[in-house]
Length: 254
Image (cartoon, rainbow, N blue to C red; front, side):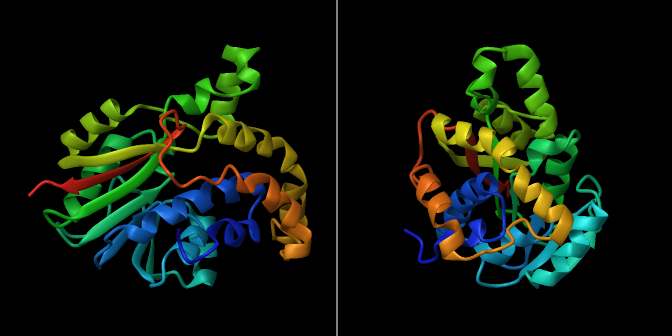
């Protein structure tokens, strides 16, 4: 088990459904080799990296203006670069490792981003990423009654471009110049449904964000203990055979 309570650390700052999935994912990186310099492909607002890693990541890259400027407050990166992952402003073989946490599923031109990631990595460098798999959509609770319309709507609000299995991602990695070494499923169907309903129960947090700039107004144990107690049983970091997300370990081909 990790020394840090990643679930609560994320719960202090995020709606509970986002804290749940990010807390699980943060634990995975604690045993992975991440040699410097490291590239974060799709760093967003920098919150995840600030809690997950004990050292600043060398480069955080993201195409969106607002989140990447918000990332400055966390000091989680030595350098922040606003650029598209399909055209990275770095020389060949510059980085010794890279990761992309729950980002690639949102990118229409994902194969180009994978190819660029491979280009800027040194031969033999590791690349870690996690994405939803097909069960992300098939295990939705409401979709079992109103399948097609609701599934497509949930895909849209999730900004989901890809919910593919390991064979599809393995083929993409091979075309880009990677070798898939290992992958595992995580986040059970029941946890997925907790995440699903969190989009609706999290509306008060959205209102708080709009009004105050913070998702959680009172990030204290006394305010969050009941929420933490409820979601803690779903924060399983062990592999789950029918998990709705998949974590991948790939390596740049020598």
